[in-house]
Length: 441
Image: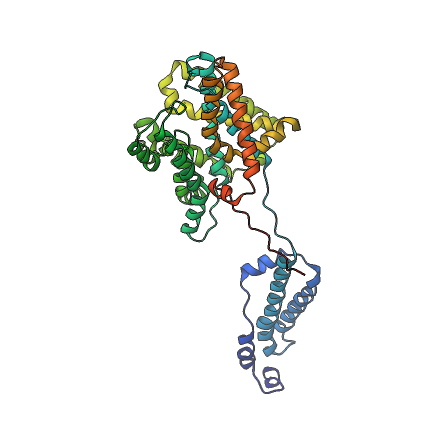
């Protein structure tokens, strides 16, 4: 019996274990599971080790092998298998390309529809002529207002990600993306407001302009969206944490914001009224990221959802707004916004839109931020040109001319300045790195 317990070199089983352990580690369960998911034939010889390991265990337990080999099979062979599987993962990660970030064309289409709706809404001017006094113009403006900005906030919440290890890095990226264009373009618009002329509507003094710029977020009356979006983006990591823990927290947050918006007359300091109202749409966008769209991908289900949304929108916007305006202001406006967004998204999912319509919408969605930033200045110049100078007062012609002028000029300017890094930085876009110069031969 002593012959089986001690090797030829005089080492007993415990000595062998002490000799082997410094060079091997017992593999944890999680890495083994991850390694088993990698199927790579180059390391198929690990299956041989598995068979040898099982045979050694059976022979040892039956008493056919020395007891010292039992420790060897328990420590050394599993360690070899573990190292082989680690090499599998390393080789797989080094040779296989990382999956590209999936681009959703529907998002660009929805952004294009939203920014074109903003241009249409701004084309219904109130100065130097008041087109809102015309009933059909006011109806169009109210209809577009029901979904245009909620759609932007839903998309912003859907695209919101928080992968940074430190909150400061995340906030810095949001500052470059949102706060820089807000400060730059709002400052320019504020200077124009203070200078004052017959071209500019709603002139303000310096003190009021500075207060509105930093503490209310609507110094120019146009860029409140960026101010509100920055505040919501700063709170986004907290929203994401709560929603990831349980979707019930997201529903609870939505209920709280809806109740506060309906019950209180919220102050406009730090654009708090806009933050609380639009936080509902922002959180809904976040919750849609984890939604299983396969459930509604079937045409019948999606068609039923779209038609149901059309019916709810007609009831809320068409009936509730006229006969129960108080209820509409509390809850009906949320129903109208969400159902309108669902109708638009469902339509462009179900219907194969011709490329003559789809491509301009995708293109507009790509440059939606630049169009939004330039729209205020172009709208001021267009209404001065077409209404004040040329004397055009026909409502249809005014809307078409202002809309077309603002859209085309903003696209041309954006395309020309897109390669300029300074312009991209001022618009909140990523600065493109210059290609390294090749060494001269």
